[in-house]
Image 1 (cartoon, rainbow, N blue to C red):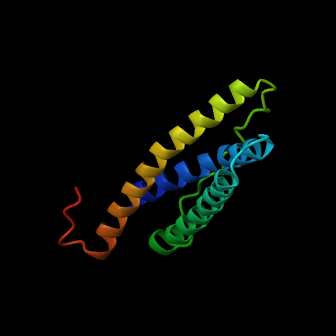
Image 2: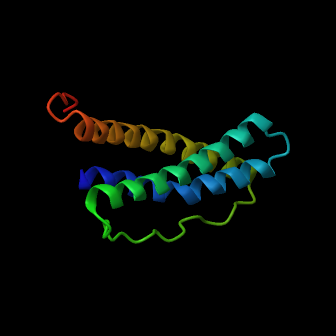
Amino acid sequence: DKWILHSVLILAQFWINPLVDVQVSLENYENAPSALVNRSKWMSTKLMSLEQGILVLIRQILGEGGLGLEVPEETSDHFSSNTFETVRRDYSAIYCFRKDAHKMQTFLKLLKCRQIDKENCTFF
């Protein structure tokens, strides 16, 4: 369980700043659909909530000491003046986030199975 919590926390913390950067970038596009901008804001907010929830789980499951993890430093780079490069970077970030979000979902399902239904957990 410690490994699962650690993995999900690291993935969530890693993606917070890049998703905020994508959100800011989308707001700078002239014709960006409002639904896309709103969805990026929603994803950023949900990811921050996930991070807080994982920290609560760590305190509950592993005790008050938690994992003793460091918060990652900001990994964003400055916006490119080239619109094509900016769009390509944003698409790549969203694509990679989708893959990592699926990993986080799988890890959380495994954790839930192991915590709630230990005897009948056939996930792995």
